[in-house]
Length: 616
Image (cartoon, rainbow, N blue to C red; front, top):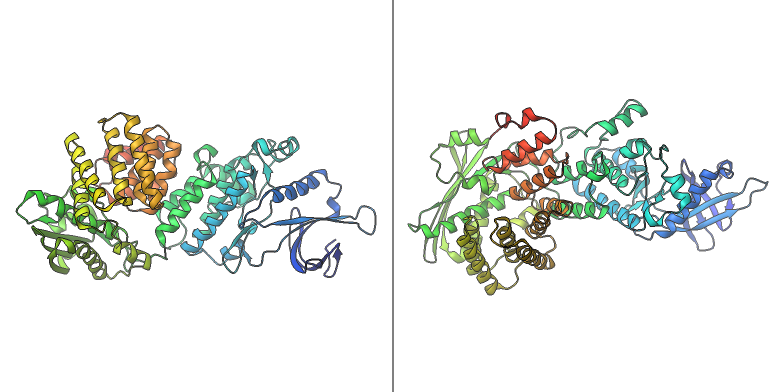
């Protein structure tokens, strides 16, 4: 029988009902001894003689008592009160009262803004990390079990189905909580192993988190069915649809993370909640503020290599470096699709006209330019052309010295963005203005080192090392230079110039030094992932590569490595990244190889054939 307002259970006075579930009714109550409001989860008297429910009730109390985390609703104690007649005793969990609304209520109004969804998902992942570290698996993670306060704090509720796994589990819990053939949970958010009544571990919560996150960003569940049986079949069989509705596409790193969590086999999901949380943090760091929305759909830019007009071939590195920096700045703008440096540099000697290039590359705009350097004097021209009309829509000339190069690069990028009628978000504007190497002499060494790195000869590699060392001697431990040094050491091993152990230890050391100074440096995380990959540890490489991609979503080198290691690991969730690689780096030889390998592994050999590869 429901409890009415005013009913007393020891020092707790019922104020109002809050809800009900399979494990009992939840009430708002007043703790008269401590003068505070609490939540009482009351086990119905009719369940008092049900050993299964009593065990689950007791287990939830013990589980919550073992957890102490700001994103998990806290337990204050257990209240047992005698009823007026035999058999009417009342048992209740006394818990933290969370004022706010459930995610179910939020999602009922539609998909959440991306930054809000990431903030919530980050906190849920943190709660799972805390629970899993204690050996606790929730097993019923769903929007109705997640509260969000007015201040944005997340509280995960209802550990009624939670179980302990591994060394933490008691024999009784293992027997009842995870025995084969018992289906426990809420169907739309169940993992495949739950649907099949198989034993579960912490990875079942990651599947539920993926389902929940999909619903947060798309406003719809990834699996559907007209009835429970059809829904269970969809969870076991179907891939989640790419999207719902006509909203802006998700960052590929987020789409890949969701699909990684939704892999059917537990072993194909992220290794743990910590890995998921790191990738979510990287995504949030890369967004900063809400991203600018495209002014017009399909704005795609290729920056052709700036011509070296200096009359000195030795200055080629400088014009190429300026080209790279403009590409990097434009790639930070979410409203644009900018072809990568790798594809751009293959066009250095092209004689094709604007219309032909635009058609073959599938771009709407081209940027061309030239650099004339004489000693310290510098002259740069740049032009933006609408490829559909072959008409220039912006051009400018800049004169100054080498010391002005940072300002010139930034000015060119901002003018191009403005000419395309795109508004930079605060985060994007800040990124465009960032210059990780402030000293122009050290920066010049860095540009020369980059040029040598693409020489792919032992002599060029040695010169690249010396140039980075020179830059470090000028400015000290700059994260970008340290990470670049690590990349050079990794490349030495990758091209068989040094022994693996020697080179990889140095690469990892430099990456660690860079990340100690800037934990969100994409290049440092990327190098760390590459090192793990060469050591034959894809399970360690992939989380770092995904984090690097989240921080630098348009870096084609990072995307290619994510796809390559996902292919090698036999994963299926990275199709959007394969497509993205084809969009921004269509001219690099590795791209069709990644594409073909992906479709071959998916059982689509016809699409893997070179003739079926759509080349931009």
